[in-house]
Image (tube, rainbow over all chains, first blue to last red; front, side, top):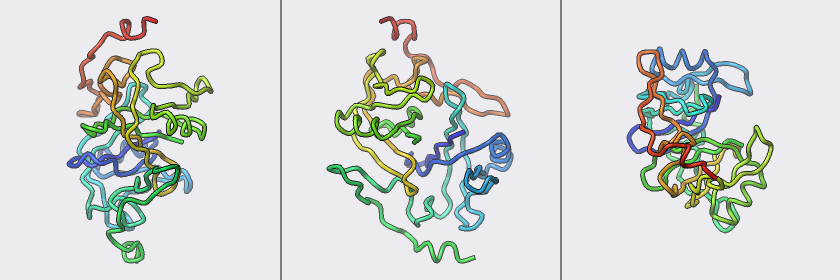
Length: 113
Length: 113
């Protein structure tokens, strides 16, 4: 099911991911966000390669019981694999997508392992 | 594609919906949120039966270009079809989903048309 991930302090929406039952159970048990990769067909812990773990403060379910909302504390302040604070850095302006958020850290230095 | 809908003022995540290209174009053109219903296989304008339209303040796209984030002003202050402010009113506490948000308006009186 889809998962909306929001910063527990700033309320910024950081990213959108996916979970299955196993991912939800592991997230609830460890208080670290664990997602389901649809492309790789496997569980992944956010931060396992970047160190940018997400510490889960609350887990919410929507009215149709088919979407989750996680409020997290984002380690390193970087949720996006592009090195930005969050993934929604392209804004629609006059019919075109404009990048509005700076790269805080070079991805090459984040994923050096 | 999935759409995260957030209140432009409070930053509360209101709901999660879906769009196709046509829905996005209509949303951008009208500044009112138009979604794609996967169950009914048709476009729907949020508020068309409830009056709870969403006035769109910004449209953002994520890093993978496969998820949208809308910031909206929610007419009536009710985004959820259950009559609540938002859809994520069930919180995981001690392994059980607990309802944390009040019903602000009886759905029977919202959808009387």
